[in-house]
Length: 454
Image 1: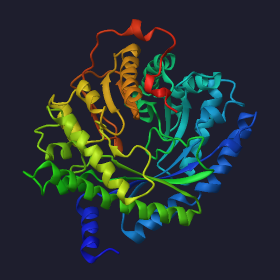
Image 2: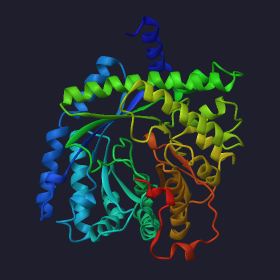
Image 3: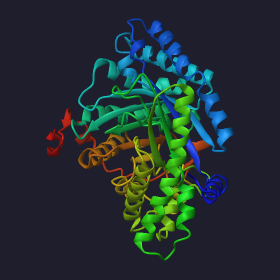
Image 4: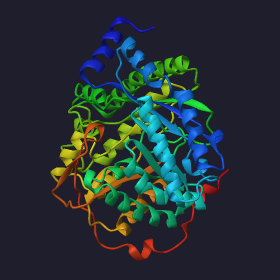
C-alpha cells in the first residue's frame, strides 16, 4: 500500500522533475501478413495494425488523464520487415511501398513512431535483407515517422563486416536524400549489435520472432527525478549515492509497472516488459549529463565520467528489477547528444568528444546516439565507427548501437535544429584518418571465444 507521503512524492516528481512514461509501445507480429504479392501484403499489414492498435492512442490518453501521469509517446513495433517482405518484394521499390503503408497507418492511428523497418544480418544477408537496406534512404525520405534498424553483429555470431560497410554507405545516402531537411532520415536509422527483441524505444524497436502475436512494452524515463534526488546528497559517500539512485529507480519503475499492466488489461494484449531507461529530453533538468555532474564531475566528459555512468547504469538496473519482475529491453542510461541539454553543452565546450562517448558506451545502456558529424565524412569512416561500437557490444555481451548523422553542408562549429524530442545537434569532430582498407575487406569478424558456451 502507498502512504500519503509517497503519493505526494510521486506527484512532485511529475510536476517538477519531468517524470513521465516515455512510451507505451505495442508490438504486433506480421508473420500472418506474408504473401507473394506486395499489394496484398500491404493490405494485410494495414488490417492487422488497425485491428490491434486501433484504440492504442485513445486508451493511453484516457489513462494519462485518469492517473495524472504523462504518457509522451504511443508507438508500434513490428516484425522485421525484411522477413515479412521476403516472399513478395522483388526490388527495393517494393520495400518502399511497404514502408509508406506503415507510415500511412501510423498516421491514421495517431501514433508518434513505428519501428521495425528492419533487417537482422549479424551472420549474413539474404537477398531480401539487402533489398531492404538499399531501400532505406528512399523509404525514410518518403515517410515521416517510420524508423529503420539493422543488426549487424552479436556475441554469438560475430560482426558481419559486409553489412557494416553497406550501412556506412546507406547512412551517407540517407543523409543526401534528406539534405533539405537536416538529413532527418539518419535520425530515424540505427545500426545495432546484440539488438534486444523487446525494445520499446526508437529507432531500434522491432518485434522479435520469439514474441507473441501482440504485446505491450512500456518505456519509463526519469533523469530529472534522479538528478533531484542526487542534489540532496552532496558530500555523501558512495553507499549513500548508490542507495539514492536505487530507491529512485524503484519508484520510477513502479509507475511504469502500473501503466503497463493497466494498458495491457484495457487493450486485451499481454504485458511484456518494462524498459527502465533514463532517456533524456532537450528540456532543461531532464538530462543524464546533469546526473553525472551532480555526482561531482565538473563537466560531462571529464575524467571520472565513465565511472560515474557505470555506477548510474548499474544502480538503475538494481533498483528497477526490485520493482518489476519483467524488466527488459535496454534498461539503463541513454546518452544521446542531441536529445540531452547537458550533453549538448558539454559537446559545445569541448569537454565531450566522440572518443569519450565511445568509452562511455562500454557501460551505458546502448551506444553512440544522435550524433551529428560533418557532411563530408566518408562512408568508410562511418563504417569504422559502426565497427568499433559493434566490437564493444560483441566482446562485452551488451547492446550497442550507432545513430549518426553526416549533415550535408555542415562542419564542426555548426549545429542543426531537429525539433521535438530529437532536439539540437552540434556538429562534432571526427577522426578523419582513413580506415578504408580495413572496411573494404569482405567477410566477418569472428565471434569471441566465450560465445561457444551453451
